[in-house]
Amino acid sequence: MASIYIHIPFCESRCAYCAFYSSTYRGNKDGYLSALCRELELRRDYLSGASIRTLYFGGGTPSLLSVEDYSLLIDCLNRFYDLSSLEEFTVEVNPDDVTQEYMRQLAAMGVNRISMGVQSFHDEDLRVMGRRHSVKQVYQAVEAIRRAGIENISIDLIYGLPGQTLNAWRDNVSKAVALDVQHISAYSLTYEEGSKLSRLARSGAIQPVEEDECAEMFALLRSDLQKAGFAQYEISNFAKEGKESKHNSSYWDGTPYLGVGASAHSFNGLSRQWNVANSRIYIDKMMHGVDGYYELEDLDLETRYNDFVLTTLRTMKGMELNLLKSRFTTKLYDYCLSNALKYIKEGLLVQENGFLRLSESGIFVSDGIMSDLMWVE
Image (cartoon, rainbow, N blue to C red; front, side, top):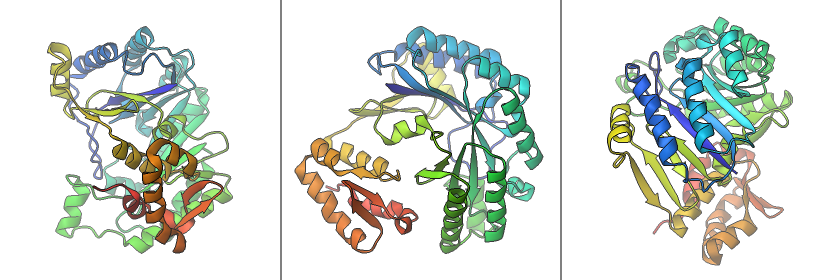
């Protein structure tokens, strides 16, 4: 089984925190869709004929595509890939793009999961972030999605916003729970280089929330969502029983995936590939030459080990130690456990039942822990 990700870079406006590749120019949309179809054709053997288990349209803002655009892309997919075993078909949407009819038509094409960028239930936060929707539109969108027959809904939230208090974040979590969605992803605000918020922070116009306050917000999130029946299955992801994202989980368990479109990444177990992060160049290369639209990295044993550390420790299940030894030699197994020992003693890592995983206190400092377990020449 394998997964396919299709990147739709178009946005109506750019969010103040965003550093993903996107563009507010849509004059080349038709050319981009043709280039996507061309790449899907050219790379039809990348997954070695594996059946596609999950399909994900991300962005950018995929909900800016018309139903006709989706029909074109799905036709291309069906021509070159085996979608007969497709279990999860996710489309990312902005709340203000959602109508019941639009969702109904996507559902008729097989879409069975929606991921919606809510970010906050406070309109002032949305204005600070440069979001173009209102809180009212969030509720309207969820209702429209359900009326269209799509029951599996995920929402994204951001905490640690400038000026955000613990009580304000508690209100956000409470409203997210009351929305009765099946999945919640929550991320601490990061000031990505090149984003509007990073420039404002550098100039002193806004004051980032202190790290210990963000840690409190994260602890509150975990506690309140657990009480509401959500299980944390990955550092930033919480789901009702059986509603974990199959697509995202494939990134963490080493499932091969094909990424199509400008800036999209692919992985087949032996190499990583990433496409040029420029729609104009991507279209030109795909339609007139194909060479030079991507970079490729062959993965040696140590690099695959580092990926294994990074992906498995992000999950609440953690790293299976027998798998670590069988895949990556006794040398790397010993290296990992030797470096992990101090964190085990500090209570930041737990070794039990054949797994190594982050403890509750280790989750918020996970980046440093995982970095220390990675192989360095």
